[in-house]
Length: 285
Image 1: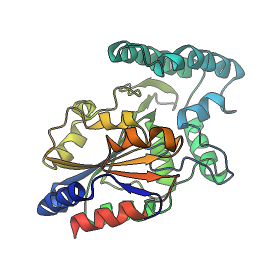
Image 2: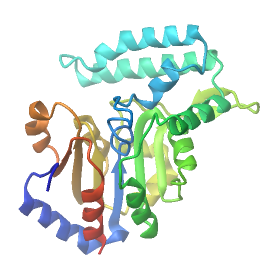
Image 3: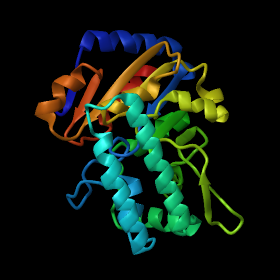
């Protein structure tokens, strides 16, 4: 199959058999959002920026906000990608970054209307694109009442607004991200739980008991992500079986061997969800 790498076919088949024993009732999906559910490359050929950078670099708030937000990015992003720092130090600094950025958003007049405007612009301006087959994937999960938990370090309100506009936010879809709270006038007040790139694990679910209740007995996990860091989403959850699907979108020659050590299936070159849909159908058939 073109653009599909199955690392160990025998091991994958063994896992599929274990998943099939439990069927849909024991299964939940754990997924990243940016560049996993969405494409890596936009229809116009540009690389898709993260959702939060749309606010930072967009025309929605003041120039002073953009200036200060980019100063924070230039200060903290090098720390995020610095391989010589310990994970505990990175987590501390990422929390500082997110805290300072959300404080700045509040001071800069972020409100519900801005969030809705950003989400509308993403769709109307072709600035965000679902992978081909994602709608079918969500349809399969909805029909079989399988929960999907999206864990993202982006703004959860943006993901939610986007999925609502795409008519994909059903009761089996749960978003664990930076969820904003507002005052009576609709102005941003605070972020309820800070989720950053290094604490995207299912231990966060302890702070979202309504979600944890849905998945705690569903110990077969179908994990989707585009980075090695997304593997951490499963930390803290007592699963029985796991199938990990990785989307390797760039620097394939340099990263493929590393991805092979971490994922069961690797989907290359920003490809579609066809194989993912085939796999989930096999598991629940």
